[in-house]
Image (cartoon, rainbow, N blue to C red; front, side, top):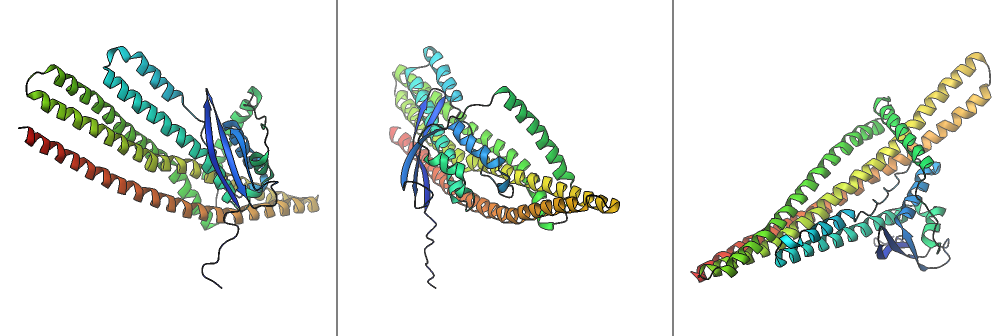
Length: 387
């Protein structure tokens, strides 16, 4: 056989978000699909979807017992532009106490931050759909096909009070599942290792995400400080009538260049480190949810075994107990078999993504460090020419 054989199924369902429109508190995503699959009526089509419809789709996967042994890709986070709008409003309120240069630069920074957040929101929603499309089982789901193909609004609404209370009780159940998983005796060495790893990993990656966020915020604070320093030196230069003004203008220009570079450092760290950590914090939670489902099924299997023993002891309803035990056993074995493949795939995917993004981040950091050195050398040379 040829070594370069092409997998014909590799590109038979391609999804991207070709456009997104922000309208007040809502974002409308244009989901673009190209496919060769016969289940779809057309080979290329677009639909408009809101965030709530993505959550609806995620919930349908989570609630389907057929997918109990699968890691359901984490739902994309809700678009949150309130913080950016609040910052812009706060800046507008402070316009009278800032110089025009300071105000314009800060506004430019906030607009860039808003645009980056918007792009990130689109990317997170796109990744969710692409993960589903790449999965050999989830891609064939009927609800997924409806989401991609149905031209009209899916009429998905927010949760009412009754559903929110139901969600609260599900949270309590999840807490009970966590206790069950932590204390349950596991005879399968593979799943015992996975359980211990995921419980520890999920905690550690939360801490790492918080640490990375603090670091990116610190870089942002430094960039904002450079704006004030640059503006301050510019103001001094215009009011100074001596030769010192040339030096002051040089320093002001240095801090402006440093501000732009610091913003790029912050942006790269946010994209390559913080976002990667945040995504796998949610993906490891999805893997833990799979472990909880298997754990519940194992508990049901153990209960069915006890019920069968009691039925045989009393010689009462033995056939019924045997059937129930066989059904639960088959369900548990099916979940376990699928879960092994899913957890191994999760490890491979995670290692590849971290390797790729951390190498890229390191290369960018080296590039920025060299640029900073050149910038400092440049200002020192300019200082010498002035003296």
